[in-house]
Image (cartoon, rainbow, N blue to C red; front, side, top):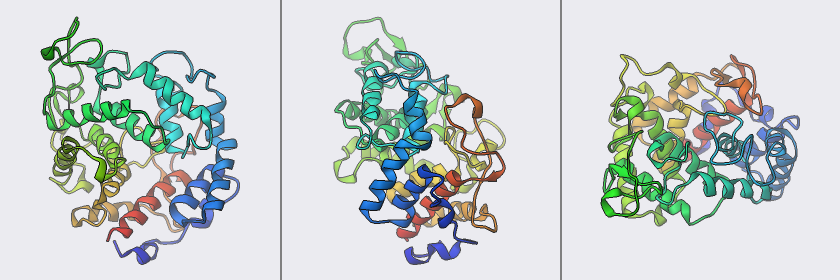
Amino acid sequence: MAKQQDWKKLLKADPTDWLLEEADPGVRYLALRDIVNADEKEIKAARRKAHREGPIALILANMNPEGWWVRPGFGDMHHFKGTGFSIISLAQLGGSIEEDKRIGTACSYYLDHALTKGGQFAPIWKPTGTAHCLQGDMLTSLMDLKFKDKRLDIAYEWMARTVTGEGLPKRLNADGFDAAKGGPGPYRYLRRFEGPIFACTTNKHLSCAWGGVNVMMAFSRLPKVGRTSLIEQAVEAGLKYFFSVDPSTANFPGERAPEPNFRWWKFAFPVLPSDIIKLAESLTALGYGGDPKLAKTLDLILSKQDENGRWTLEYVDHKHKMWVEYGSQEKPNKWVTLRAMRVLKQAGEQM
């Protein structure tokens, strides 16, 4: 990578004008905000339009006035039009409570129904069913949507413990509190993970890098000056894990298969399983865009640009199960291009 003023020189072509086309108000808004650094007045006007037209408007139009999608309650995370995934989609699209109060209603509703008192986001309203990927994704999304609630502090505290292992309980009660510290039962053993450093039962109790990326992304949303010592320890543990190998290989400790999953190198939007761009985004957002150990990862992202300066939508997950379709697979894609340019720009600023 190069210095801040030189990052665009590494591109085969500059696709900024393509991203700024009026026909795609959602992409245009984020390009003005994150790539062009336009003046505040222009950004606000674009944000307003993005919330009234396109994907954000469509998702919000399908929201129940109480704040849920499809069915009331905690939000079925197996349903890609449900409350949880709708909130995640809004965040990745640049949604903001400041622009539409309905987003705040949805965030409040989700916390009321899916966050236990112990700080676990539970997809089936059982704190023992929490998972690193869900915890990180939901915290990142709520922070990006500008949602503020003291309960998020408890959720961050829980997430930090799952990384460091400090005070991590083995059994929880229905409210998500440690059985060893008392409180009403019954108690249940943690199902999704049993140890620190992103360990997950889905990965046979080994570290899950996909979930870890989501956790690190969520930590990056906290200003460094406001982090607790426990969160700082968790961030350091996560950095040690991800930089223990060349991140571009995705060959992180804990892989069960002979080779890492192919989806690491298949760029997607919206981002559900983590990919190499999201990995780079999380580490760059934490301030490590200029770290030499991330150089090959950034070079890999650059290498996937076509001759017109555009990136392809290489992987589509649950395409026909979401509110919006974001492009055709194996075709140049504005959303993926925006993601790639955003992380390259931010990394260039840290060189």
